[in-house]
Length: 298
Ligand code: NAD
Image (cartoon, rainbow, N blue to C red; front, side, top):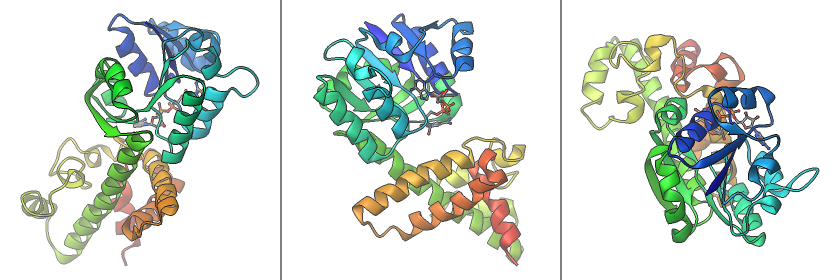
């Protein structure tokens, strides 16, 4: 089986390496020459262009930044696209985090070209990509999911079939909206506790064993001390950067607008993280929003 892996950035390169380590024939490409050089240094076979990598491929994996990049690459901008050159009936797996309707458009293009396709965004970050412990949220048919499963399991620990086309992206956007809202709520509670004279440890000891318990508190605790491994203990080095949270909330906003859901908390979180990521927060862990809340509290 020939696998083309396109997009060898922070996530894509370690994912491609883990896939190649299983013995599959993996050929990588990235439009950034430095990324191709890094991949070659890491022992990955590389091609001179995306279509070179994908010509005759049975599986085409993409790990880009945006939906526009995915759709352009599938269709081809100035020449043949990936859909045109892949083996007939190839399986296209897009792991980028993109909008649900962009993912559905990608599925439709693949289907019209006689191929199979899945949306398979991930969570777990660069560490998860390096250690093959990513979680994959997958949208597509049962048959295509089962065909992709062994490949995804080579790069991740948890692979969940969420439903039909676009529903992997839907699961990702809903989960990250919960995360954003809960991280802000935890941060506000710590700042309120500070103003009331409550120690961080006392609030943590109560809330982590009570109904306030959540990942944003017990793993990503936004104050130093209670959870020694949380980014707050290393000056908010990510972790999950504010820029990426802001990007994902932009996708949530798009989904909220297109469905007409009354998601006031999600929209407020979108606004707060957009502001956070417009400044230094872009490169900080998203739990660093506690510093904005503290600074803006009179
Ligand atoms: P990145 O910018 O490091 O990598 C994306 C790569 O795609 C770049 O190297 C870019 O040059 C390449 N690319 C773009 N168009 C291309 C094309 N037509 N052909 C070949 N290469 C092309 O981004 P990343 O951090 O690896 O993230 C990738 C995706 O994963 C994003 O959608 C992001 O939202 C998502 N994601 C990232 C993280 C994270 O922690 N970094 C976590 C979960 C999900």
